[in-house]
Image (tube, rainbow, N blue to C red):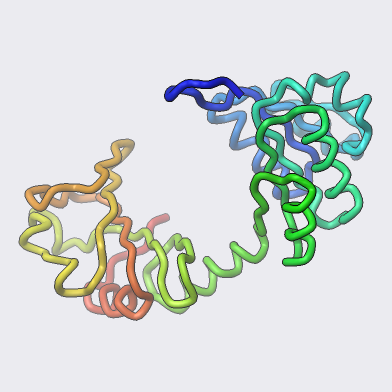
Length: 230
């Protein structure tokens, strides 16, 4: 990886083009990353070729193939083969062996994840489990459209500002004291207002990102009934 405070990854290799791998590759490509996508399935590779810099058919556990595709020059590697344990482990191991600085690997179970971490994965993710957690919280706390779990009873939630908040300042609303919630940021169109001041005035269309206990989220949304973010 390049050094320096302004560094950001530029080249990403994704092995495995199932739903998760395809979504990751497409999203990264759309954000401007140079993506190399690899899968054994010719149809999946053909579909990916329309969206990424390089799509190649082949075995992600073949070291010679990875080197021929210059995966060793990638800044980040994503191993998305969560269902095939052997392929997942071997691809992760090979990415580290050929020198990919940061490897993110998908796991299906805790044991699978522990194994990936032990062989060198820098980050292990559980997409299905995380999606289930988000869905469960969004259903149990009405009006929340997205949710990140921080603990079994708290998290970060995103929702539209209630209509009657528009025009009021954060000092007027005093969300922290009334609901024991902290407002992390306001998303206003494409603009992000991080740690907004108490003088910040809510505008129509603002999205609020709040952190705190689930029970307080529920009280807040039931009291104000904001419509969910689409």
